[in-house]
Length: 92
Image (cartoon, rainbow, N blue to C red):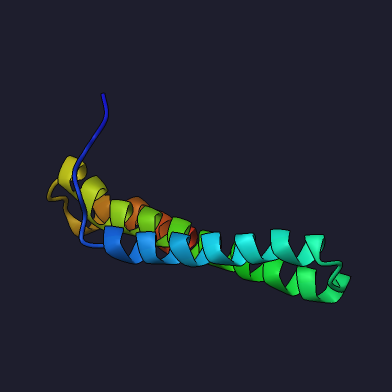
């Protein structure tokens, strides 16, 4: 089953992925033009960061909203594991 909901973070995620797409296109052009390894590596780093940020935004939103909908209201001591998991995931 596919969840086709649009979340408020989707426009931000799309923006980041389009930025990554542009950087990646630049990398391909740079390699074809014989640009320096340093220049190419810097652009690849930009691609990686943009994709990573998009992934983190998506996961964080899912944890903060979709997971909360499934779990529902819990007592504070019952939430501890979920809250800790949400904090740990921020470090990925």
